[in-house]
Amino acid sequence: MPVRNELLAGAKDITPLAIGVGIYGLAFGVLAAQAGMDGLHTGMMSAIVFAGSSQIVAIERIVAGAGAGAAVIAGIALNLRLLLITASLRDQFRGRPAWQVALGAHMAADENWAMMHAAQNAGRPAGYWYFVGGGLVQFVLWIAATATGAVLASAIPEPRALGIDFAFAAAFIAILRGLWRGAAIDLLPWGVSVAVAAAMVGLTPLDPSWSLIAAGLSGAVAAGLRGRG
Image (cartoon, rainbow, N blue to C red; front, top):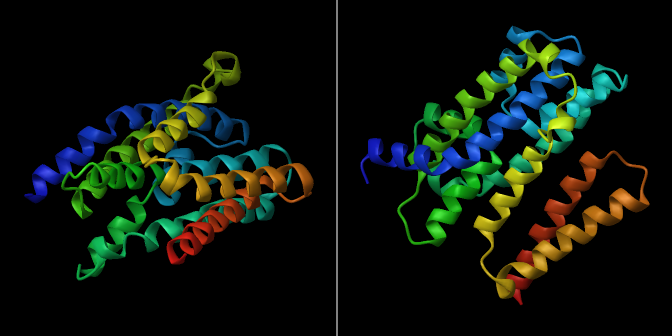
């Protein structure tokens, strides 16, 4: 498939999820404003970091008074899952120039990664440029939405009252639905991930960010062991 067509296909397919990303981007902007950030600083953070859940966790720590160090550690811990995501993209990155690898790595997010694999599972051509096309749409919308949320924070004093915070969960529910390949393939690793996350949140004093990392790694190990069995 020509590069232009693949870019447009990725951009088109990601649009419904990107709208959800934009909605919880507004909620993040409001949260960033509560931490003393203006629209410019919020937009710059979104462009440089481009990791919604990690940004939210980091700013939540600042708002809670945990300090910058704790915020950075929490954000990095949650972002470690991207090591698994980028590792799974080795076939798409292989043989490409450094700038394309860097672009693809920066555009790596849960949504466009999931959409690419869902398209591949459906037998559609979806490779590097499909992935980047979806990422670019999210990138632009995320920056615009977070900066706008910070600017309009005074007009949205309590996003939870409007249900904006649920957009984050809704986007991930949609991602999971697109990735589900059937109980025979996914039930074991998904079940292990859920069990580990629930156990760590309910039984340990660790920051919830670590439960996501442990759950992802545990699910990956379960999938690998099942594949060898």
